[in-house]
Length: 215
Image (tube, rainbow, N blue to C red; front, side, top):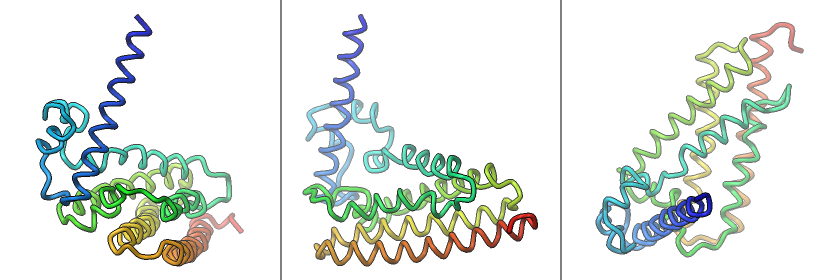
């Protein structure tokens, strides 16, 4: 029984990956707005209901990792070492995004970063996700630094996520422009580091202002 359950789970996972890969290829070739869920279903050789079973809405075919990403940022901020700013906590995650410049992927035009620049509809969903991500980071800041006023935490989180979104846009633009990888990756990394350094400094200032006992 356990073996059968494991086999079913593997088949479901394989089906989900196949649908997502087919969608990415279609979006890359035709654009997100020009492809329907029915088109994805036909190309993946499944019913449209099967697609909806795995991806409740069309934009979930692109934003299916949104919750995972949101949780990663939440945990990075909540579990950071004492004295570490949220900017330093998420710097590793931002660096991972920058490193995607070095990944040669023929389906890259069908991925999140580039599609969000090609489709105004998807861009709106992406920015709504960034807003939720910002709220999550703000909650993590207030949970770990209760002396910081909620509105200040919210403003700081918004600034952090704006850096994340900027990096994502740089990745997408690089894919669409077929620009040389290395120079764009290096300039993006340098700019993101400078922004996070500034936010690190700013956080220590506002934390010190909120808590006179902090040197």
